[in-house]
Length: 351
Ligand SMILES: *[C@@H]1O[C@H](CO)[C@@H](O)[C@H](O)[C@H]1NC(C)=O
Image 1 (cartoon, helix red, strand yellow):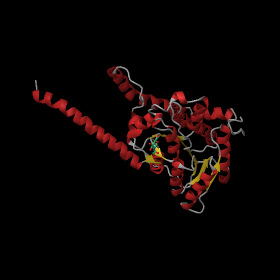
Image 2 (spheres, helix red, strand yellow; image 1 turned 60 degrees about the vertical axis):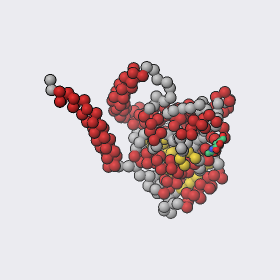
Image 3 (cartoon, rainbow, N blue to C red; image 1 turned 135 degrees about the vertical axis):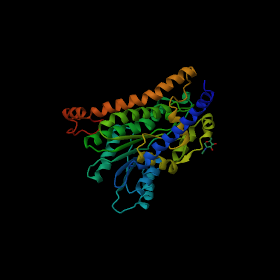
Image 4 (cartoon, helix red, strand yellow; image 1 turned 60 degrees about the horizontal axis):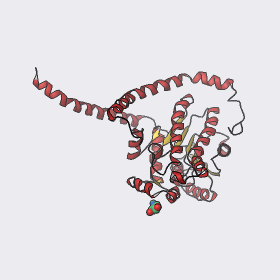
């Protein structure tokens, strides 16, 4: 028996595996450097919630990059102030920067807003939709009412879902190869005491975005969804006003960022083509541990399931994606036969 070999090999394996992992990580990161990133210059970007907070921060970055920017929100005074900020940083006189006041929690509102923003662009749809409107009102569950529960769902899920629906129909009809960007939150991965009304909406957005990422392979429309943590924006003060003390205490470990700081990471993710965008440490940890905070079963058995899923799910996803791509021609004929491309009714609320 060769004692030298049998001693050396077990020690060599971890080293080799580590070197291999570092090499693979390096190669995938280098690949990103050379892949072509999305450029918003000259594109029409539609930003909901664009009058303050994260929405305004993203609108400003887009204006600085030379995009045509349309912002929508309810508050006309805020829109006016935001327009002054955006006008001050325009990069060219031909840049079209406009603001609109609409309530986006109904399909009709979402549809009317989209019709309005298309007008200065010869009726053409926006190239990119950034859905950054919404608000958070944490409370103990037993303090919620039917009204607060419904409002919170409006302000998380519907305020984005309706715009996504209306924009998708227009983009598919006009064959716009665009982008639709949702925003969820850490709570869309890992929910907490106090978020009984807010968490389900954030998770529902994740389900919608996950579905559309696959379905929209049919149309070359890219889906993105961002997962910010605590952000110090005007919305934070509203959130803080009803936040239970215990929730505040648990969240102490999240240092939080400003809207401007997060906007940079969000836009970088969109430019890089990232699907789930979590440009910070906690976001990445939560994303990679998506079973969330549900207690797990037997540790060893679950580790086995985990391993099988880790290896098997990406393979399954790639095969399903490829099946969807293979369905494009048939789907196009299906839409044509149903009269989708010639239909004049735009709003799903009126069709
Ligand atoms: C949030 O509200 C708590 C009181 O519930 C207060 O102590 C804290 O300073 C507030 N935080 C911010 C950032 O306004």
